[in-house]
Length: 251
Ligand SMILES: NC(=O)c1ccc[n+]([C@@H]2O[C@H](COP(=O)([O-])OP(=O)(O)OC[C@H]3O[C@@H](n4cnc5c(N)ncnc54)[C@H](OP(=O)(O)O)[C@@H]3O)[C@@H](O)[C@H]2O)c1
Image (cartoon, rainbow, N blue to C red):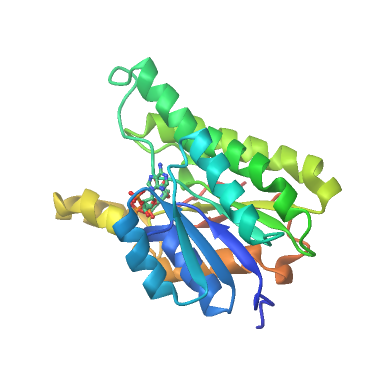
């Protein structure tokens, strides 16, 4: 299937590795220009080299509003529009209600919710010039069922879905499609790091996944490239799980 991505431009945030990188790679492999960001410049350089000559990076911390303003301003000096935005960030820290302070909550809100608000607001004028603008918010299976010890993710990520579902009506005046993707367990470097301490943790997770394994990043990126592409032009306001069947609710 031709996703019609040649010469289209996408901003993919938090993409020097992991899920963000898998999306940038899928878009670049289809001929798109990709702009990635992250906090560590060395990692971004390496990722950009892997993505090829149509990729560029900006050092940006998406939990900081000024960084996002600067990022989009810099993009605007180079191009008149972008065709899509993949909203991603690092994960909020684990912890239970008793562990977490107000400061932890505030930081997590900036990282997980406000980054999505700021990115949407700042890129809107660049997106609406495209003939097929699209935003895809990356969240987590935690928006469908809480994950133990991830109170911040369980509490704040659903707000991103609430925003996305509302924007499906509000942004339609700019013809901007909005959707969300909810990964279950995808075996990225982060998951590797979390699990190296405990092989039994991987075993107990995979035992709960009907497909019997975690997903691979290359099983996530292409799904997102499709949802960002003009080919999915009638998918709007949707939430798609990429979880190997882990979520077993009816709705
Ligand atoms: N992998 C999974 O199974 C899974 C499942 C559900 C949800 N998620 C969520 O999906 C997101 C990505 O997960 P991942 O597994 O791909 O993690 P990862 O392998 O650790 O990659 C995270 C990427 O985000 C960048 N990043 C982190 N914080 C950032 C910030 N404040 N501003 C800009 N860039 C930032 C990192 O680069 P720098 O460190 O250089 O900034 C890196 O490129 C996380 O929120 C995670 O909680 C993952």
